[in-house]
Image 1 (cartoon, rainbow, N blue to C red):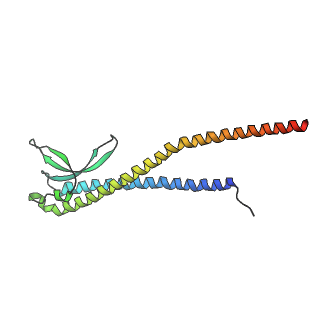
Image 2 (cartoon, rainbow, N blue to C red; image 1 turned 30 degrees about the horizontal axis):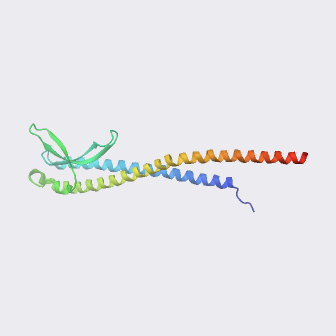
Image 3 (cartoon, helix red, strand yellow; image 1 turned 180 degrees about the horizontal axis):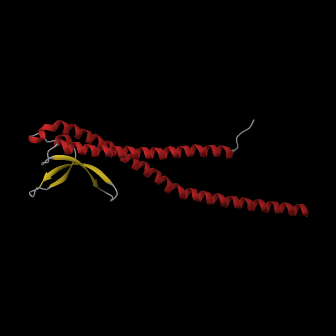
Length: 184
């Protein structure tokens, strides 16, 4: 009965690991695609809010602002205010977004559409936050494993090479002693 050698088992294990690595790459790509889809829906929600409300104080919208890093943007809900010169400026709104929907005057026509859109935006923001957190934590975990385990692996590799050399040296000296006893 043929028993697979250690090398065959290791080769089989490496194939399995390659499959897992490929699956991990696909999962990261899927997370990135989901995040892009959420961002696209947030942009579409901003369009709905733009056309559903008149250009007045209290108009809600979605903007992507730079936060911690220059290459990273984060979606925020804003309310537009008009200054004395007639220019609009955005202010970030946090919490209880549905209470910020204007239902008076010219806002009344599409108040329900605006309220439902804001509910959708709130859910999309929560989804985006959880996806971003998952992506960040997974990436950080993999990076942490890589940086902490690599030095240990390098040390173990070096130590095994030293032990192998010492073993060969001991065996060589043992064989030399046996040869001396046999010739004597």
